[in-house]
Picture (cartoon, rainbow, N blue to C red):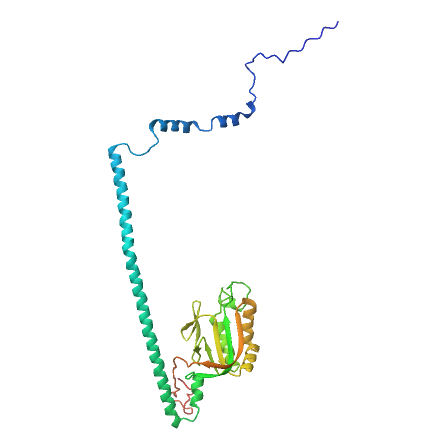
Amino acid sequence: MCGMPQPQPDRSSSAPRSDRRRPDASMFLLTNVMEHSLDDGYAEAAARRGQTGSSRLPTSAAGRLGLAGGLLLAAVVITVGAAQAHRAAPTEAKERQKLIDRVQTQTGKADALQKEVDGLRDTVSAEQRAALKDQGDGREELLEVLAGATAVHGPGLKLVVDDAKEASTGDSGGPRESDGFSDTGRVRDRDMQRVVNGLWASGAEAISVNGQRLTALSAIRAAGDAILVDNRPLVPPYTVLAIGDGEKLSTAFQDSADGQYLHVLEENYGIRASVTVQKDVRLAAAPSLVVRYARPVAGSSGPPGTGATGKGSS
């Protein structure tokens, strides 16, 4: 026997049910954040502030008096500091101007003394030439030229050496790293030494660097990054003037080992150099000369003017 089919329960009933879930139950966390955006502790603090007032200024007479005193003290300190700075500024300016005036005065005195020294040197040179006219054998003028004691002029060349446009550092193992130089774009004292020695070896009769006449006793050294010629600092570009047969001197120098060294500096380190032949080069006399005389060693058995080893001493 078969039973009658059971009716399906009616799910469309609108009767309220106590266990029905909220439509947004799955987004409880977001709902809680949106509905309670301010923490309870912050909310309580804000409520208390609203009850007691938001101002933090003291309400008692003593507190207000202390605050006024503090503000007054700060104003006094600021005013006094500004006044002192205002008074100190003219004083510092006056001291600076005094130092400038002293430097200018001393510079003027030094220039005047240098002119006096130059005049006395010219007088001594004239007296020496006059005294040697009758007793000399004609070689004194040549000795003056070789010693740099007199100004000279004649054909020659002009060599200008300058630092690289952008000094750089490198580890290429070139000749400049051997002495620990890191700024390979700078012209160094030993570079100028090689240039000058190369010109002497190529046949130069007289040489000057930036107007500084070189002699047999001249020294090219370095003091920090500065190049010194006879203890006088030079600044780039370095202009080297040499008297001699311009064409032959230029060719001989550029073909020499020192000329090739300068070419390597140009190619590898960006140092700039230019050589031009000049029809007339003028060199001033050396600013100071040191005269030394050879003397025989006492008790020597050699010829006059020599020691036991055949060599003179100074």
